[in-house]
Length: 382
Image (cartoon, rainbow, N blue to C red; front, side):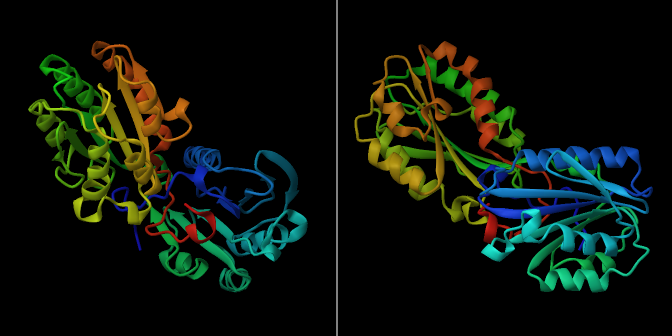
């Protein structure tokens, strides 16, 4: 199968990966070239940076292979030169030198074992036998090929449905997108007022404009609440950024009393659902951004807890003289990451960049996890 930057699926934020042994086997032969190898190196840096590395968590090994000796290293510690000559020999080397107890593998403890092979050329040796042997030892083999890599050879090396071809290593960076479902839950009660609601609209425009909005990237929904909540926009209402930004300009002000708890309940039951565009079943990050100005007329603690239990990360933005405890009851933990307070509406837009930094820390990074419906989560909890 051949994947473009539009069709490659992305995995969850790798900081959520819990435990696995992963070996990265990288082609550094002449067929790759300096420019492409630099792209691969950047990708590997991003990949490893997203993992929760630790002796009892994720362990990573890395080896290079070409027609000549190479240096292999675990994480960032360079070790002795080895003698990997071709893809087949490289796989056999990885099997013997990485996937064993003395090298730090926890295969005997039942930890999932993964081998990611990145190659840009044709193999000059036989790959079938070493690939078959390593797969028989319960190692999942994932192959990413570039350039002249032959698809049938990639499929022979890889575990079933785990071979992927990209045009160039540069595609690794091109497909670095973000993917998330974000629901803005906005106070439209009479306490806000028309002038301040205009500020909220501007805040929404600025924040949405900074996101990579598309049906296969970031999806946006907007819930406005007062006496009763209503969905101005569902996650599958608009397919591109321009459509939703044009709509936000015309967002009408609701008025009424502030029932924040009802809005949280509404979001859980009516918005974060598959029929309304939620991709939670695809392990896409679910995020709620709650903007509230007044103390709620109803309980917020229980519906917020239910929303968090659903797996939704809640950012709470409290404005003016709102009860100090209420946004904290709404927000996910830790508060310093998910709770924001500003003294007045005019200061709300200054908060946009800070919110974006926090959002981007939670949105799933699309550093080619390479695989649609990847089954790494069987052992990695993606």
